[in-house]
Image (tube, rainbow, N blue to C red; front, side):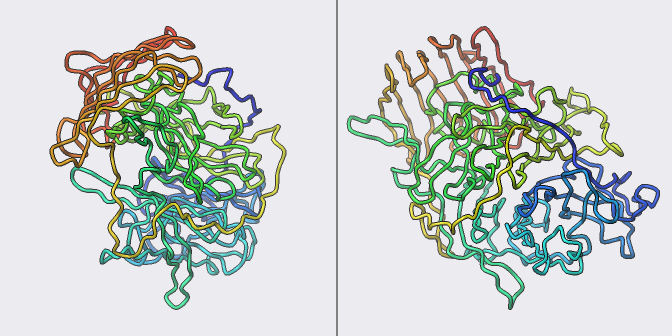
Amino acid sequence: MTVDPSAGLEEEVSLAQLPMPPTAPSTEAGSCTGAINPRGTGCVDPGWGALGSVGTYWPDSEYVLVGATFAGAPATGAAAARSGPQVLLVRTDGSMFPNGDGWKCLTCGVPVPPLGTASFEYGVSDVKYPINGFHDGTRALAGNSIIECDGIQFADDRCTPDRMRVYPLQWDAGIGRLGALREPRLHPDDIHIGFSYMVAGNDSFQQVPFMGRLVFDPANSRYTVEDVRTLFNPAQQFQPYTVGAGNELTFNPAGMIGEFRGWNHDGTAALGIQHHSSGNIDAWATDNVTGRSWPLTHNAGYTDPMAASPDGRYLLAEQVLGSGRVDFIAAMPEIPPITDQLPTTAHIAGIRNNGRRRFFLPYLVDLDTGKSQQINVGGDPNWNAAADPAWLSDSTGVVWAENLVTAPACDGANPLPCPPSGEPGGRRSRVMIARFDNIEPTPPQPVAPAPVPAWGLAYRPGDPLPQVPHLPEGTYTLRGTDRGSAQVVITENATKTMIMQIVVTYTDFGDGDGVVINGTDRVQRRAETGFAPITWHTDLQISGTYTGTKRTSEPDGFTLGPETIQNNFRATGTMTTVLDGHTYTQPANGT
């Protein structure tokens, strides 16, 4: 499924690649020889994901921050420092730094905090992802650290590695060790950050978004996160559905953050991902003060990497829309996200990737009209967008990294072939820039300090994480905003700790846009664990603006196993959507 032409933007786009270090022939020490890089400034790892997150350089749109993994440096000597995860400052205008490179390594040779001194997410120190520049141009949030250049802007020739410092970023979660800051993102006020905290078990996980204030601790050469509050509240008024008189359900756009994805342009709202229509996971913004939410994308299939333009006009959202990956479950529009409350989110989200084959495509979204366009139409589908994109500071362009599908997502047991890379040295990553030729440059505006997210909960070290509530067992009515209704029957387990089944019966249900839905949709958990297989039994018909069906194979239905959560698509049975004569089927297992 693609963007409806009536909802499409028509911005003029110029695409190019940004200059990157030469490619190391291998990851072996010494493979980055003088013949490959005569300037001795290092080589990038040839593998998938070596060029990663990008970040805005606020003082000047002629630069952007890029995370890169270096490889092939000699084992000893000064050049040995040009190895592993690094932060680069890259020219966007085609000009060069004084040494003749189009990029400058900011962190090469800079001591990185030892393991255990920062709130590392996966037990490793990695300054490569995510990257968010501070507005003064002298600092950046880099992974779970903050890099600084002694008060000198990164683009200044005086900013050399001997002036750079890498400070660990720490959060005391009160659990006997540092709390893991999952994908922290700097607030536009340069004072606060948002992040997710994830607790994973053998059969479930919980992820809670937080916001806190950055405090520099000079005595211990570190930054800490203080005054922490959740960007989540278990109260009913902040849940996707509320229950009214007569057991009537009402869709409730509030607290729709789910997984935290950043901030809007002025930091007055947090960005996140949640269901908007069934089977789709869209971008949402949530007001920091009131907790009220509004959707930013519509029928994206799945999106999570995103960035708001500094002028507040656009969102660059990397969406699965248009790839054909999830249309079998997501293409039918205007189905309310009722069965998704089981929840089905993790299983549906897992469809979006197949390991090292991603299906994200970059879309420019107009935040006033909701219109959008894919900005790299006609590009090679084997090159997939990587998190996170970043805007030029004057809002005239956006930068993102791409990776080429790589084994085991191709070749071997996978029936899909691995394509060769045409990039320099055969590297399997690159960094793209899209300039919007008819968007006038706008200087970045000052951002006021973020207000306290009063709708969230204060979190003190050692507090238990707030638990996510669910709709209790019972029979409910959901009325269409235009016409008709749906009967919703929810069944819990014996201990009332989770939903085991949701059955929805639609009768001439219409929520807008001339769409009418009839039929049944049943989703059930196969065991009392969060990672249990989930089965759909679906027989829906859509009429009006669109015509079509969404059906599962019967009598056994369509089942997604827990492997899907690891981005390894495994299903039994089929689900097929037919919309306006187009038939959408699921991918083959393992692809």
